[in-house]
Length: 95
Image (cartoon, rainbow, N blue to C red; front, side, top):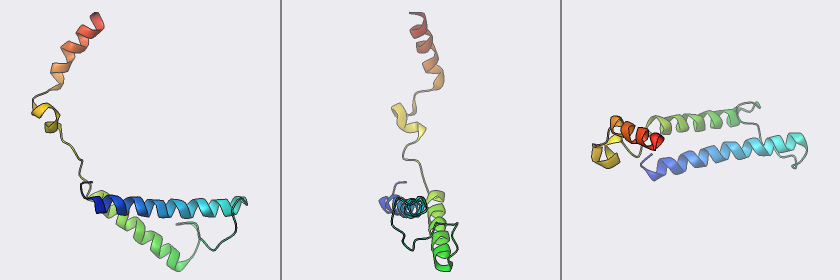
């Protein structure tokens, strides 16, 4: 992702869903105090389910607009090809 807002939004939404999941699992196992958090996409709750679905939609939209930060032309000015590497690899294996 080239824009930092998309990266920060993706990390924030993922952290939100992961934290909610771990807190709920901790409550179920008895190692965390019981709160009113629902398990994302599993526990029934109208507003919770709607919020999780909206968050997943935003994540899918961010990932659909993802562009790699580099291209094959960035490597050595686009002049390197795979066949240039093969003789060097053979020389390295022989010597």
